[in-house]
Image (cartoon, rainbow, N blue to C red; front, side, top):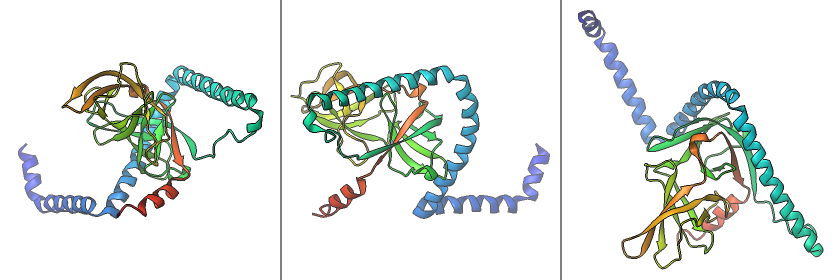
Length: 275
């Protein structure tokens, strides 16, 4: 201990200089947007590289579960394809016009890091700028909503998870289209809270909650979860517990959604934002 103290005393100018450098960089990254973005991208790249090495080993151990997820997803896609075929065959006059204009594209990615036991959870994916990923893209899985891309590097991206107290999602009750914000209280990784639903609305346990589509990020009608409980909060609105359809403890494969028409919508809305 005495030797350590002597070493610190002899080199106290160096340690003082080091502390001042750390403080200076912290101030730069905190109050300068450009430097802060660069630091986030660099951190995403370093973390992504480290996580990818660990992920390759754990993925090999989970091949059975991964294959089962792919089988379930293929089954869902086949059912959707059959649905479109039936619509076309029942109304030949529709031809190919029954298919809507393509608005979204999907990019497959794998989860290489994930947390569920913090107040502000993030997810790391093995796709980045080189794969067409940008901040504020939606992230989903075959089971439900996952989160939104927060920062990207060349080959990796960081996602702000639904299990993050800063995350908010516009959702609605599928049976009646009443909508409100969905947030996570930081307690149960399987439950989120839907609010601002008027107390006169017919709400029942088991009601399906889906995305409202009132944003440029998430398409309308994506599964979020189901009502597990509810109570009147104050005198005008419900506080609704939503059991999330996605089990974040088993999250492995996701899809990143690119809205091809988002810029057009944003430009139009900005024309009236100052009114």
